[in-house]
Length: 165
Image 1 (tube, rainbow, N blue to C red):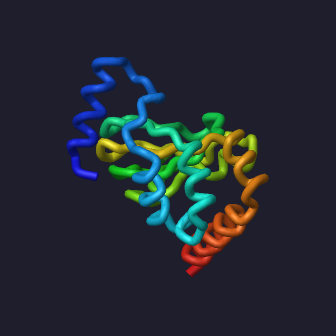
Image 2: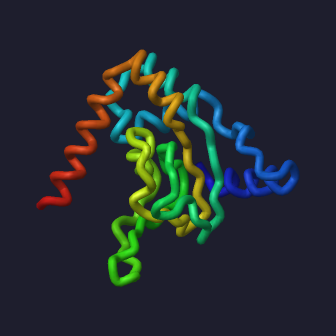
Image 3: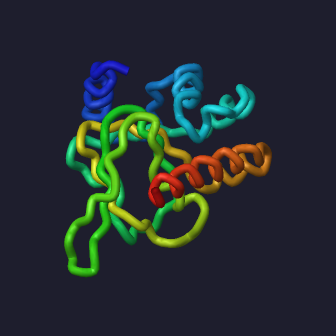
């Protein structure tokens, strides 16, 4: 999406306050986008429609903290637009950058599977829009469509293989 999306979003937030119920993307735009996300790319249309219905959107200005290491987490984020930095604090108290992520990348996925604190801090490097899936809605969705889990496992294994190379 062009930058006018972010400009419009900022204007709406100033006018109405930060209302996460504002829906800027329609269902079809969400489905088309989800087909580009590796973790969802192989899912059929029925599942993508169901998934698009539970997504919420959130805007994060450049340099804002999306969440901090050790925060309680219960959401998965899919980057629609922008860029984020994932970092961790070392035992010496230094910041260690783990990754820079952009459109179609996901983060926070551990938060929808366990009740443990966040393992890293995520900061928006640019104005960023994420599509968010919360834990309760996701669990309901995988009960109905368990094949989603196979895709998540596939992507997780690919990530592990890349880090061990």
